[in-house]
Image 1 (cartoon, rainbow, N blue to C red):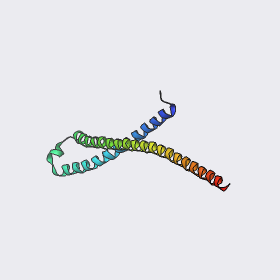
Image 2: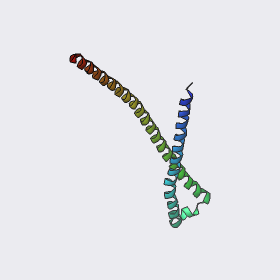
Image 3: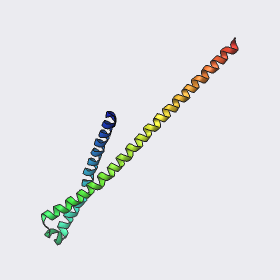
Image 4: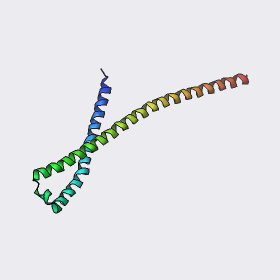
Length: 125
C-alpha cells in the first residue's frame, strides 16, 4: 500500500486533472456551440427544411455539437495536463540529480582547498 502522502498527492493530481478537463469541456462546448447557433440562425433564415424541423430536433442538433466540442476540448486539455505533469516530474528528478552532483563538486572543491592549505602550511615550516 502507498504511504498516505503519496496517496494524497495522487488524489490532488486527479482532482486537478478533473478540473482541467471540466474547464476544457466548457470551453469546447462554447467553441462548437457558438458557430452552431450561428448556423441555426442561418438555417432559419434560408432553409425551409430546417424551419420545418421540430424544436426538439433543433435542440438535439445544437446539443450534439456542443457535446462533441466538449469531448474534444476536454480530451485535449487532459492530454496536455498529463504531458505537463510528466514533464514536471522529470524536471524534479533531474533537479535532484543536479543538486546531488553540485554537492559532490562542492565537497571536492573544499577537499582540494584543504589539501592546498595543508601543503602551504607544510612548505611554510
